[in-house]
Image (cartoon, rainbow, N blue to C red; front, top):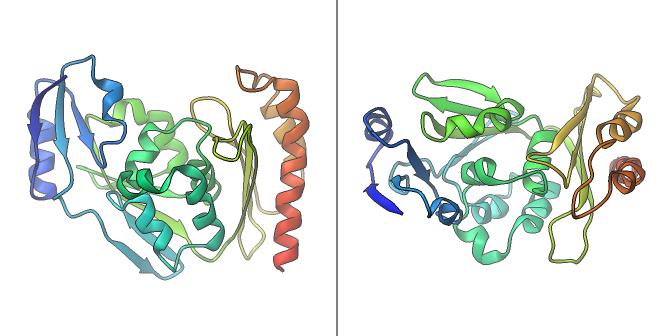
Length: 253
């Protein structure tokens, strides 16, 4: 139940509201997940007018405002083609119109294709009020604490990388029960992420070059059983998806 509602006009007003609330506030982007808090008294800060909806290129990186919608990011031509395809897998067209990038990072679980891909890309997140940047992997660990105390302003991803994504789903419209996202940098650095399970996707490999990623994937899913799939199934399928990702990257080259 919303008992307080604010719609600040800029970042400074937002930060002031964050500092002066008796009830820990919920930062609202597109509002697609606000109903999960509906049984609790809520103080809501609506970020629509704050001015965090721009996308900027900066060298080999793309800076994505926290309030950029998934659909706007999909339509951005500078975004890697593979990432745009992943965005299509994340949500329906109607949801992509309103769901924001930062909001998706905060509320999504391990079955999110989009967060799996961002984690593979080693995305970084800029936070206020102290204006520091953390890896997405760190934010995923602390996001339960971060919602009421800090403001995400932008997400930065590299553009000079190759990205591949493969998944297994129960139906074409369903989120994956297991997925693999792999990013490879020009110098050979390789990051492998597995999704489809748990509170957030898992980074299972990050090295200067390929080697050992399939074994790491098998180990990472040794206890990854839930109502969607058994740990044994995920352990069997994970190396297959990783091989398919690398085959896709080799075909691109």
